[in-house]
Length: 244
Image (tube, rainbow, N blue to C red; front, side):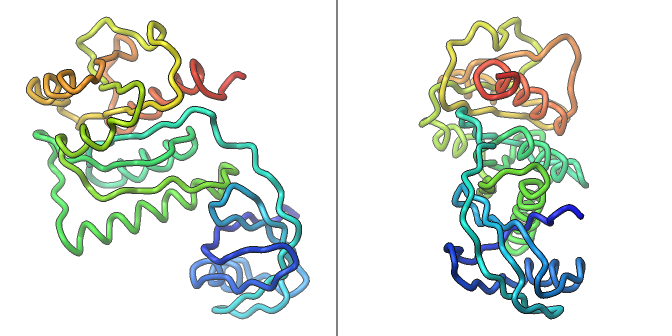
């Protein structure tokens, strides 16, 4: 039987007893119906995997004894910061999930001129918590030991300021001949993805003025949830750990 891999925000230390947080405990106790003596593989975002054995379990509370931490080698040497314009339905979920699988470091939801999703107050908080949950599930599935952070929604101006620590900053734009192959390999890259209707000419110009390079991924126009996956796969292939 495959050992379940579970994220928990509990502190984990070798030989210690840890009580899983509510979400992890309910998944282990209620969904998986695991019992004392069964084994788990835990991670809490510190870069390690922690083998653990259940010592007590109910539908709401689970305690484990933590084993020797194991270094996790699934993080790419390339840091990717994704600025992803908000989209409706499950498209944003898809973008977040696949970005985590592709090795994204952090995700910034963006509101742009042609964005038709408006989030404020409690609704924004709820969606951010949901996307963070999507990121956690994706990290569990793909074997990562660090969970990318989902930051609060930003405007284009805020995003341009936020991404200044990245050596290379790219904005996807199909009306350009610039390709990723011509760029000097960076350690940190920012990717800016527009909405279904694309970024406006003013937004492209604003990004270029701040040092973003417009790049194309090929002759076809990609959907807003597909574009980050294709872009990150190429970045990881050229500068990261895909194909290495």
